[in-house]
Figure 1 (cartoon, rainbow, N blue to C red):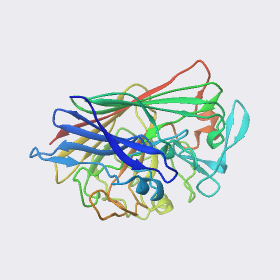
Figure 2: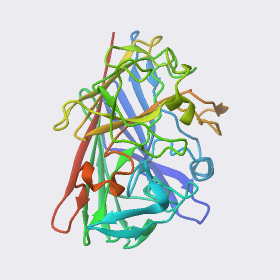
Figure 3: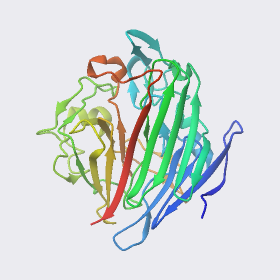
Amino acid sequence: MLVLKEPFGSTLDGRGVDKLTLRKGSMEAEVITYGAALRALRVPDKNGTPVDVVLGYDAVREYETNGGYLGAVVGRYANRIAGAGCFIDGQRAALVPNEGAKQLHGGPEGFSTQVFDVEDAGEDFAVLTYTSPDGQGGFPGALELRVTYTLTGQGLSLRYEAVSDKVTHCNITNHAYFNLNGSGDILGHRLWLASSRFTPVDADSIPVAMARSVAGTPFDFTVEKAVGRDIGADDEQLRNVKGYDHNYVLDPAQGLRLAARLTGEQSGIVMETWTEKPGVQLYSGNCLETRGAKGGGDYAPRQALCLETQFFPDSPNHPEWGDILLRPGKKYDYTTEYRFGVE
């Protein structure tokens, strides 16, 4: 069977959007070309019943107007860049702000707002492409992006490939919101992270240091615990962002390795996040409040959480944290996998 491709509507400015449905074994995924967004991901629970474990919308307009980046591919640089500016080989480049004085997820014309082309597709995979023009969001270089969704025997793989004709910054991730029970909040979900350090932020969500030990803090997920166990603790970092919205520095730092394990306490679904990136952003959906949820209704704060694999936030302003520049002749090529099972 070939991939199922069907119209999903049009953007406010008339761009047509398609939906692709991928299937393999007991798993099914829906991807739309607007933002290359993962709209649905159905996996069997402990009883073999399919559960849609990601949030999404029934119409393009909700993706355009509600915000939240639900399921979208985000970039050119995921997460926040302070002062809407960054350093490129020692020179400061002015970026386009979209969150106060900051830039978030590539700015107002980030990848989440673009309609991707379908380069190739089959029953269990889809390749989507987009060319970001020189100067989009303030970033130099025309950047050619390819995103490949593949349903495997274990779960869903996302491969991000990009090349640029000028030196630029590039940090691409997927902003899927996961609820492994399919409904309710995620405070009872159990989480383990392969990280003993997190990136503390100020009240404006900008890092104040690259890393701080999680030991003795509510940020310690080195031993599995419920997401909601410590989320209400009297802690400045939690107060700054109304819960968890922090980068975790992964151990070890390189290679495709296990970064996180999340368990739905009701469904029994276990999701492992594997990545080649050095960090993962845990976002507990603190500000999630949108209308037009799939099947009707609305989404509420802490109804889902994100595990965004990434370079560290505001890294373009901290070259001492490592050289992450994408240069002409080099290829950005990173994979993240979501592997599923039951307990």
